[in-house]
Figure 1 (cartoon, helix red, strand yellow):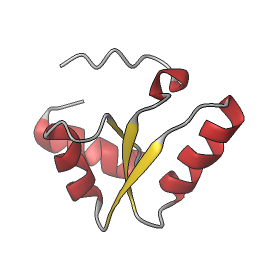
Figure 2 (cartoon, helix red, strand yellow; figure 1 turned 90 degrees about the vertical axis):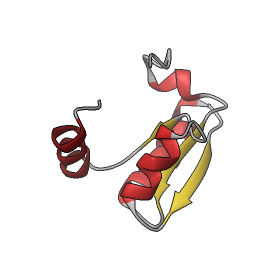
Figure 3 (cartoon, one colour; figure 1 turned 180 degrees about the vertical axis):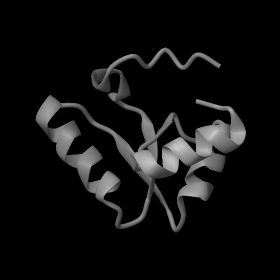
Length: 79
């Protein structure tokens, strides 16, 4: 469904699923601070679990690397 998120600033106050200890998790925190927005990171051991959390509606967004994202989209047809 359409999340209504069209820019990074739209993530203000949102829950973002990430893989624990990943560069993506660090990047989200740095970018949020740079933009002056507040986000809540929901950390998972694996990217697959983060994606499932998003699909269930528990998180508002996922931040992952482009390789995993491309593979996920290719396998599921979901973007």
